Image (cartoon, rainbow, N blue to C red; front, side):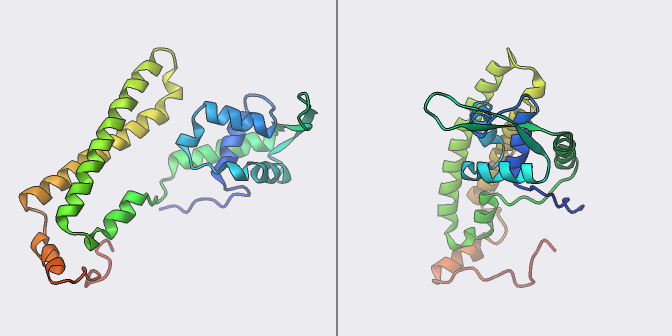
Length: 213
């Protein structure tokens, strides 16, 4: 697998900022409002407290530049930024990399599954059933919202919502299949798992090392 390129500004908030400035020059407060209005904090991990630091770093590396300033009533003067040619190139290159190069991701659900042996199979099943119920409710809501958006919004601006829905549906489907194995007793090692808890022991590490290697 290819290693991701080291970028001068690697915080995903930097990509989000560049995406707003392509439309028009803005001051940071306006950038944050635009990103929130477009739901970008749902599309990528954004830490709003680092916005001004990211903006300064983008300016430092020549991806954006000061276009002027504005004052709104009693508010302090705000610096307005615009994207540079270098910033447009960086924005496009970053998107190309993210679209074309898969990177390992570590969702919290995956982390929890990797250590779930600390719980009895029955408790794991109960928690997974609750997760599936919540997922199904979320999926239904997202399907309804997406159907509404499709009436007015070009699909180009909805593909990330389609992807998110597909990932939720896939997670729910996989979790249901795991639940079925736990319910009908076909999950490999289920008796051993129960015995660990019946004897007051916790599951040891996989004896041959990482089974995925």
